[in-house]
Image (tube, rainbow, N blue to C red; front, side, top):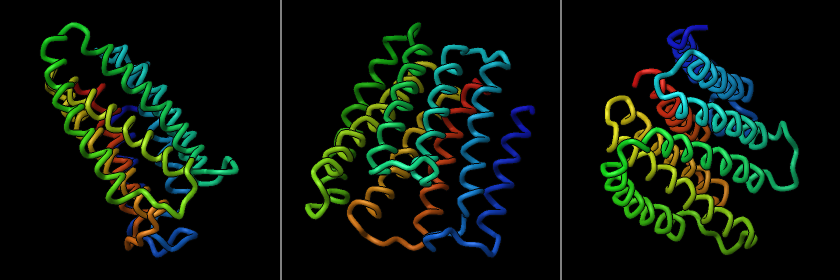
Length: 230
């Protein structure tokens, strides 16, 4: 399926999920689980289609495809379709692997413009370190939760921030469509913050699941489709 058709399919599917009369099992949003999993799987298909379709930045497209596949596994864990004793920890591990793949993609694409890449990376590391650590202390850390969950959330948040910083470095080095990657990294952080605030801190946000998936799908799409338009 051509990339543009996949993108249109994702837009329509998300719209159907939001507009429809259904709600998810926990009443935290309208998107039912089947729609969420179809969106995630369609992003995997899009990532591999871009890679196999002869992307100009082949290294970027390859590692992004692997990262989206790991993200899909993380989505299955978070949706309890892969049962684990602690879905949050399991999900963080799967997504952590995905972020390592994404970082590998960004470094591979930036290797020929290291001077500009390093400047953007340093700025990003400083900015996202403050966001990740400060946000964890202020909004996510919950003394009533077990130590593994709290520390795991901090470590994972720092990894996501590192991924976003490398994405900013990539955009600084090559510009163009890779600014979508930088925006995608930022949206990924927003999505994960909402999960931490609701699932770990225990703060209720109206239609939280829809906000999580809106920012998550948009973030993943930015990272994936940047490989097709650069």
